[in-house]
Image (tube, rainbow, N blue to C red; front, side):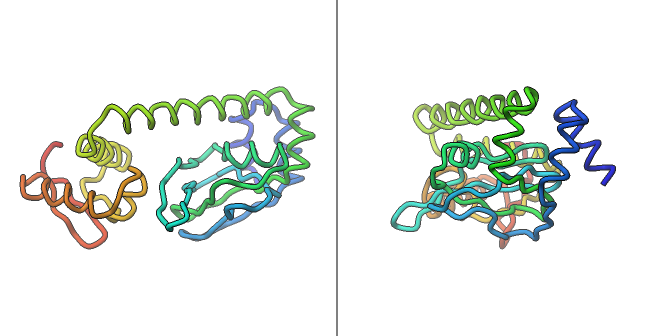
Length: 211
């Protein structure tokens, strides 16, 4: 797996650590929509995404979901790390958002490697720092920004990321990302459509003018 070795070396800048991770982890290929982490379960493996994307979600007692964050290529799951290293159950669940390839690193292996390799310890600390900043930004947006503003910013972010004016996303998915009801998102999207800014398609949103 030469490409995987180069990928890990770029992240950690440590050939010995790369060899340890590859030899002691399982390489997994997953289709879109597959669950890799169940809520309220103990963590046995920590995912390190090679290709694709994973979404981390939380669900309340009524079944309402909210997106906590995405795990992109070169990233891992902060909540899994926190729960696994502290031998606690997960407070969220995770599923693939795209076809995904990842390394499943056993938690006991990760604990030993963190103690042995400073670069891995730095990676974990940086991951916690980045997720904490994301949480602060999310709180700021909920407290200080209106829902229509947050929806437009989310659509603009998705368009910028894909470079495509047609976004393959449902009203339900947008509601999860914004932490609101689907009906609220549908009403706001209908308003944007009436303003000739978007066109609502089944499972897709087409942006026709600058938001």
